[in-house]
Length: 279
Image (tube, rainbow, N blue to C red; front, side, top):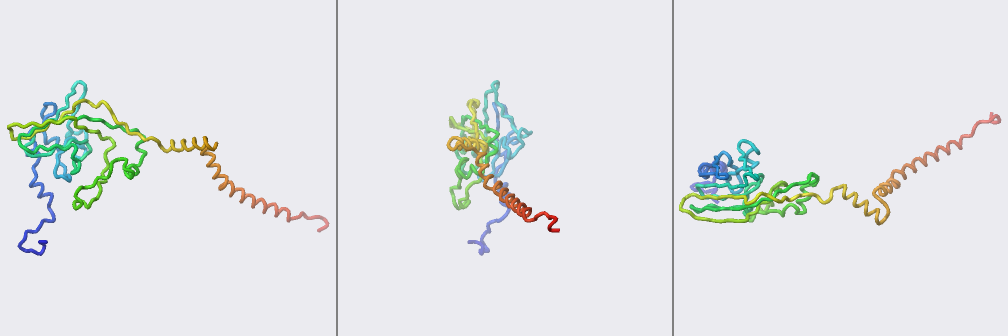
């Protein structure tokens, strides 16, 4: 509506990313301290930025920002000798903390594992558990589009504001190896400091695994059909193949060969041998 107004300030059409970089805080301005099992580490070495639908985010141990087990991958290892798993983060500004798998990205609709540290002096402790997922090798033989069309992966996600994306569904498939994260406890405290902090604690080591496997593969379907046919009709898959063979290849073969034999026999009978009387 202001396109024809010469005195009005025009809305910029380019340079949004550069303008956002000027306004947004960088890593050193957001993080004040980071500790893993009470051992401090360099926040900005391991938290790497990425642009998302909710703005600029800093991800830790994400396959989208760093190489897995590379120099910028923080080894968050736990075993029976070191059972603790505490990640303590201190912020200088209001932020939102997301708990995700290594191949996930923060999204505007994924609010279940999002925790906000907005008010100064806000401390929060979040207790979580994990359950891993393993896949059988035959799972790779199933087409992912066939599962998605039958809503066997997840129902289609739509943005709540139709004017934002015109109601287009999200076609992002979940990972086949992601772990299920559950929040089992959450406590909030207030202190006299201006900083904001959050502590993520894994309560126990994963003791169960989800196993994803296919119920029937192609060969199982063939065996089942053959068993049903053999039980009720006394036939088998081979009988069906013989049925089509008898009325196609064998029928054509007999027809063609039979015609050739008839032509050949007729030619032989028509030609009589010469005799002395004919001479």
